[in-house]
Image (tube, rainbow, N blue to C red; front, side):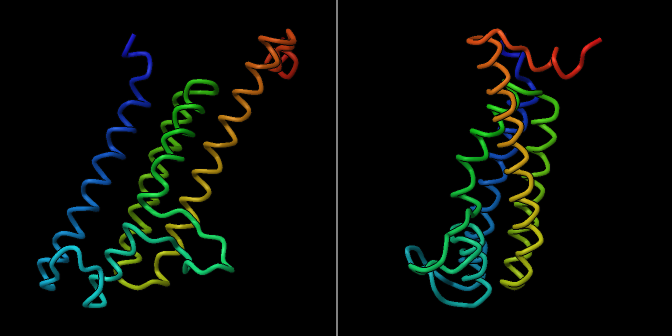
Length: 160
């Protein structure tokens, strides 16, 4: 039934709306600084706004490990949100998803003001994403062990 994943669906929709909002912010910055597409350079504020939506938190050079950005981070976020919600706990996954969305907004807002100000949002985003990934991993591991080896971790850990 569709209502079974209500929280995950709501968080997914909020995150999609956030991406639309961020794209709109880039559009407003283009208008404000008279920068027509497909140009991606110009006024410093526009460049930071554009980078906040599209580019990684670290400079892309062959010697650095590129991190996730708002658009690049979206697919891994959705996968970990849904896997952790389906296999671990929907409420905890939804809460982690809301923290992720809040952190991405912090990242975007910080980056627009200065590149250095993006870091608190970046680190909170990373923490939320890693938490979702860990919950999903534990949930899948539990279900794999239970299904194929008849080992129920929940019963073993919480004997009553």
